Image (cartoon, rainbow, N blue to C red; front, side, top):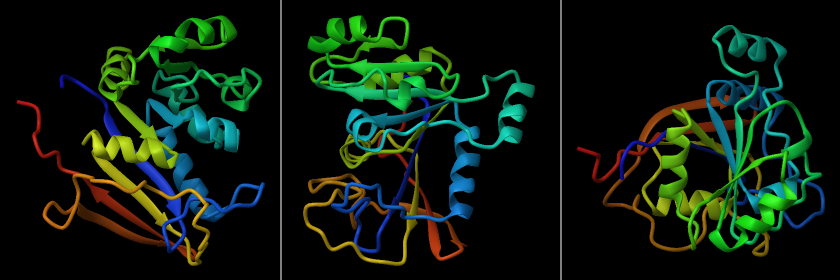
Length: 230
């Protein structure tokens, strides 16, 4: 694969690896101090990516919350908020969701080929819609983002998206926050799905930082690529 952005995976999970529970309300796995840290990470990135399921379930805004950080981005010649990016295999996206309506940020939907025409009509004037192949190809997505000047990409989930970036060996860093409680609901979503992933006991991630943030802990791992580009 050619040039691609630096890919940073960001996730908060329970001690037993869940990123939500079965309740209708979103489960908060972090605290205000860590939310501010995540805001700082967002402000340092060119784009933020989530899957369409996260857009539907959590209705995220994906904006930099701090006015000071937005001003700092403007002073560096950047837009106040990173580009918002989502992936859709089915085309099931609501143009009234906060992903599309909140804040002044460029929006890009990478869609599976059969859904591009439908989404382009629904999102006309709201978001760019880019053909990402069938099935949707993350390598193609990253190459297109690199061509748009995205050098640093923050991936905020959900589980299937994190799993696919890891499975394809397309991540450079993992920032994992662990909350001090269990969920224990087998029907709830987990950080990653079962299956073969490149980082196992024979190919360990590099622990770059451990930081206590109130009652949660941040584990920051570097993910060296098995076959770095020549």
